[in-house]
Amino acid sequence: MGAGTLVSLALFVLPIGVSLGILFGLDAYRSSTGQPRLFLNQGVKNETFCQTSYGITPNVIDGQQYTLNPNQWGLDDGESSNLCMNVTIFNNATYPTKTTAPAWSITWQYAAKAVTAPVHGFPNIKIDSDNVFPILISDLSSVNVDVDWMYSVGDTPVDTLDTTQFSRTETGINTNVAVDIFLDSDSTNAQDTVKAKYEIMVWLATFGTATQQIGYANGSQDSVTLADGTAFDLYFGQNTVTEQTVLTWVSSSALTSFNADISPLLKKDFSSLGGPTTSDYMGYMALGSEVLNSNVNVTLSVPHLSMNITKS
Picture (cartoon, rainbow, N blue to C red):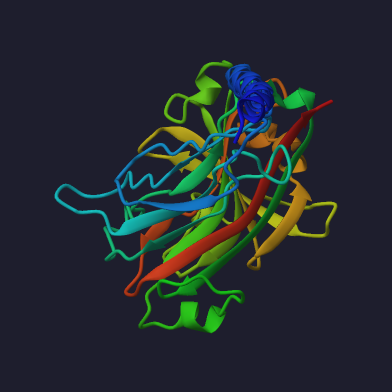
């Protein structure tokens, strides 16, 4: 190779090196300012978390932030974790829509606790974006929940819910699938699950005779049918541990594929019950499962979820 060829090659390579340097620098700048990156790792990783409580916040670019948590808050002293959460994370931090959440699942098994305190935990995924909460109930235009979920006996997710397995006495399964919302007249307290005055739950499914909503003994206080045709009954009562007022909307059947605006369940006139009003703030929203007990391993999988709150 002659000297002229070497010079030509050097002159050819130099612009490429300079161009790549500029592009990599631009990519780093876009990432630091929250803009979509030019070079992304398109892979997917699955991570498992078996801690009692641990916040898992997958990175997201130009989308709504979510945080997941195994949240085994109800373990008795000396009781060890019997639940693991699996989270599917996109390495490129981009999801199909701005409100699409990472796919996740839990597998668990617990012995029954005291009837007065039967819940072992509420593994869940919550909206964790600063630009969403707090929001006045009167300012809500829609609270859309679009979710596909499935519960199964064993360690492997399935495509079809087998209610027969869940109703067998020997399996002893008691759990639910629910949306959990906290509200308060104070915008700061509304964002704190301990300090908030009100809790509104929307149960998409109930399994087991021990899985009873607060106020169950007093019967349904009201009912609402949403625009998609799904009907919910309202139960009302006090959480004697947290001293919060709890309103629970319960579906009569398991809604494994649910896509509806649930804002009518929040805007309802609760004045006769001493519940929240449209002047209160919504400060927290999550979807999860209250895990009570089971004699066998059970798995909840949530391959698709989007929670989208819009203002009027």
